[in-house]
Length: 384
Ligand code: ADP
Figure 1: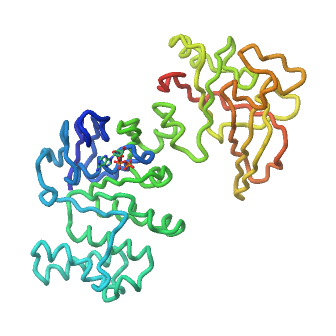
Figure 2 (figure 1 turned 45 degrees about the vertical axis):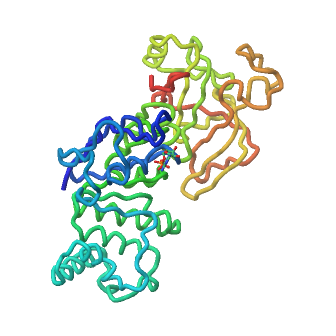
């Protein structure tokens, strides 16, 4: 059991080039499950490999339980890794596969057997100990790989996309298994994935990286409710948050010719920053479809995705130039533009109930829940 600290930790593969991991700061508590998430190339694997001792630490430090790991070889760090390619030995049984790291470490036979038995019980593999990996499902093989890590009783588990070889259904069940297993064992775990759903469902806290830089380190709920910048806002949540960079008006902010009324404190915040445009974030569930004759953002629906319990509508806000009577093109809208792109609003996603009756091709009017709006600086993207 251990806490893990990344202290301004950097990795620079090519001298002079942009760091793959740039002054990363993370304080991971004892027993915590932390997920590193971000797009491909954001530095997640590099950060994990630095902690594992498989990559140099070119700047700053990484500490496990207060001990600086700079210069400490991987085998002396007391960590266990589970990778995407958890190659098991095909000619060894499940039990032998799980016992292998212990054998390498010189643990005697009876102790090996006991540890493997314990791990197999925890993982529900007791009945499979004598089978070869070839006679297991993908999910069971994944559990054997976990077992190989568990038997070592490491201070820290490191996992790099361990579910990516499984089919979609197996991924969902295995992710629940790993998360609950980690909580039972209470071993500090750092887990890498590019999948934000995996990150949000598994992690106690999630560290979101982009371009080698930490964007936000927070609980899943905080990431969702208070994204630190527009990048986080767009990355977390599926479908993604609607982000519109639009002109600020007297009354609020203008999306597709309609002034979204903003609460007083939001207007004050915008005024404080002295910006003429603002990036507004509206989650799909924060839209309400209002009736004919009511004011709101006019949109037409291109796609309706029925999921049973709810539905997602994908559409485009109608630019003021679309409607015959709309004369609101003063903010540089080009007449005849076929969508609201000139208002920074080219697509819109709405979450609604499964039986909303809205169809492809319909014109609807949308009003956002203005209390829950997210505002970001139009250039830096930082939360206002
Ligand atoms: P992620 O895991 O988020 O996909 P990586 O940590 O693998 O990202 O990579 C981060 C950046 O470092 C990328 O730009 C990648 O091209 C670069 N990189 C990764 N490994 C090496 C390497 N061995 N040599 C040079 N550059 C690398």
